[in-house]
Amino acid sequence: MGKVFYDLFLAGIVSWFVIVWFSFAFIMWHRRHIAKKLERIEFEAESARRRMRVEHGENLFEVTTLVTCAKEDPVVFELAMAKLRAQKGLHKHAIIVMMDAFEKPSTDDLRCLEVALKYADVVYKTNVCDKRENLKNLMAIAREKGLLYRLAAPMDSDTVCDHDWVVAYLADAFIDPKVGGATTAQRCLKVETYPERIGDWLENARLKSSMAAGSYYGQVGCLPGRLYMVLTEIIEERIKELPEEVWTGIRPCRKFPFFERWEAKCKAGDDRQITNYILEAGYRTVLILPAGVKTLVPDTWDKLWKTWRRWGTSSQGYVYRTLPWLWRKPFVLWHYTTDIYISHASVGLILSWFYALFFSQDVLLVPLSVILALSFGGVMLTFTIRQWPHLKENPRDFLILPLFVAVVSYAQFVRVQAHWTPWRIGVWGTREGVDEEVKNTFVVEVTTPA
Image (cartoon, rainbow, N blue to C red; front, top):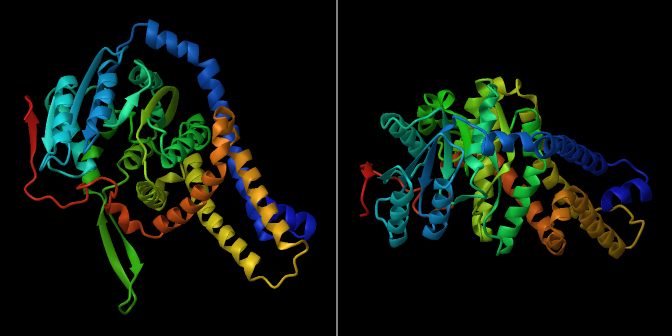
């Protein structure tokens, strides 16, 4: 905003910086404007009716929850499983757990296995280090065991439900026959480190912006894998494709003709692809705000960058790979293309600002110190306006606003790198052993602790 003020009111020009800044403002305003409509529907018009239907009425919700657990903190896993087992308002609820990456189980792995046996209906262990493969196997096991119900709910092992009606609230969304997928409102379980606080902030900002706006149109572009629900009939057959998905493309190299063909088996992006199956089939995807969950986010900067790289790779890569049908979902298309635009334009703005500040030959109209102060104040004001919904709820986060600005600005460089390195879809990156190649794979049912 400081640079905008300088260009417009001091230099008297409409620079490309000004144009881009206003385009950002319009995109953010539009998302928040639509999101507020969804919030009014969720918390005013629909809240009491949903509570009466779910908590006080008769229903026939039948849900199969598919839990993947890999190298989890056993304390968090027990909390997650206890909350899941305590879910109310369900006519039938089957919980099936896959203990992932169980080749050489650690003490914590064995404790997690005990937790799974305590709360789940069926428990399997595997040395397969691939969430996509394990989701496919979980659904096949559920069908074989006669436990695959009308609604399937994939869940991560670090997801803790806020209350005892979360799963029923998700199931209630499918009263609308046009709904094919529903997701929870996700926040962070621990907010002790700065990366965790930034992660929680961004989760809340997303809820109050793009996710809520997408839900208003029935077009949530990605049902995040922490805990969401889908119609089994839509994905049961297509989930078999999930572990076989391969991305291909061309990238520059050092050898003549300086381009090479690449191929990568997809490991990241399972939740985005399952959402694609639902949207492509013509169904709606929605966010249920009262269905809140808490989940772990990266607690170190290194894990944070790796996580954002993984998300950026799948999020942006799928935009191009779904274009043949994505045009039929205009909000999803608008959302993801503007995300790509914002990332690239933000990097351009940051680099051009540094260039103009230190290398431009233009005569400064005010002292450099004033320009720096104006720039800093303008950035803080811009982010305060954009993040006001979160800051209003969490005023203590004003104290870390400069850190938030720095982290989010760097994150745009991470996203741009992810955009131009799609072959990294085959790397998970944040869990030990998950990216290792496994031979002689096994999937074995467990009935007693090892």
